Image (cartoon, rainbow, N blue to C red; front, side, top):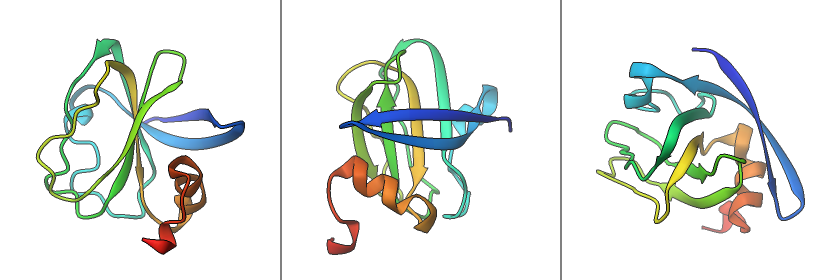
Length: 119
């Protein structure tokens, strides 16, 4: 799987991620059967879509961030393990799935505007 760097700006803060680029058949697999310590995954779609994602056989929570073609955040949501379908309210062209783990803890707290340790 190829890597791709992605930068998001959220409330004036720049967040950088090195993500695995999901293409072809890997778009249907995503984080399924991966470990919590895996890197984020980036999905690129040629046309805007409202495709649903699933976390069946994903054994850890992750943050899903739906983006437009300019990498502007459309919607974000923590997806719990074994959720059948999650769909954003608006069409998107990119999706970033970030495992909730120690490596990305700070970035996720910024994106959620809260302290995960308090939940």
